[in-house]
Image 1: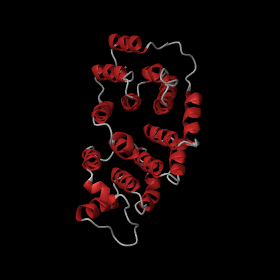
Image 2: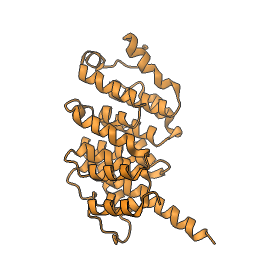
Image 3: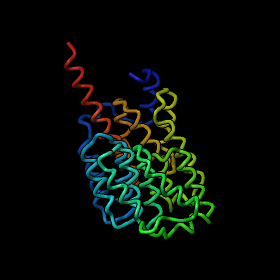
Image 4: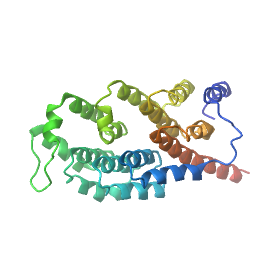
Length: 276
């Protein structure tokens, strides 16, 4: 077990979770994500697609993300590109390279970030071309390029995404660009939560659980995303407790986490059954 019993008890008390939750709500979680993926609302589609990023190795998550990269809205296409990078989908590299020709700067940067996270150096192209102020002919004009390089807020968010290694912060810097460009406090806490995703210290888990109750939905999303990456099945009830959250983005993040931990639970049960 990754958490000490005392630390885990505190987590339970903080979240008010019922450990006798019964059957893991994986189907309910998929219903939330699929409903968001097929929604008529751009924001709901974006939230669902972005949440899929914590499910590497899940074929259904990959299928949904690849479908979304053809979405009519650029923010959703950007979210899908970043999610494919987070999923580690080398199979999707041709799709991502095609998105480098998109006319929307957010999509291009998202595809570039995803390609770089997959080890494909073609992702560097946009950064070289923005640096010198031009794009190669035939690849589509960047309609927002002028605003990007003259808007301090836009440029700051871009550099934050670059400094974070293109993922997963870039998902918030680009797919959620319009929201974050009005909020400089949220991104800092979001980044803090995401950086803690791989830290297995019990104090970190306590901090992340507390952050899932933050009044900022962006911080709740980031904390749930990070908890999902902890990959500890004892956090299942903590994540499931947020499936009814009033914010659809939070529900999607919780749903993806529940699905991921359901898989971890199943793997642990299978391993224990094979132990003599």
